[in-house]
Length: 79
Image 1 (tube, rainbow, N blue to C red):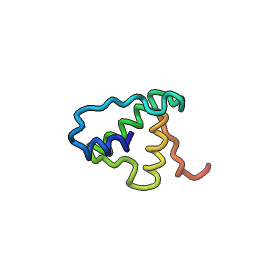
Image 2: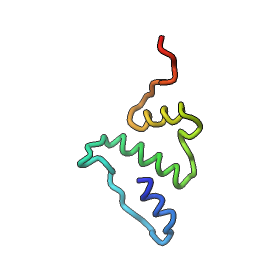
Image 3: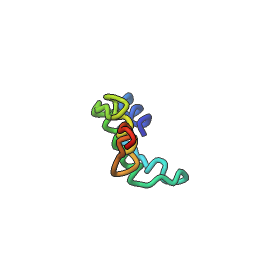
């Protein structure tokens, strides 16, 4: 979806586009997961919000939150 959004941003003559739930058919991705990923892509492309880019920890956190409602801090030492 990020690639689609980039094309739209570069082609202002395109007035509208329909985007189905990418990955939810043959890929069997959960609809909520697909929606989270599409929303994140939209935010990055159209609102220039770069999520999960501060450091490796934030990247791991964002990656987990794209497919579930919680995250596990993978940077904590084993106890």
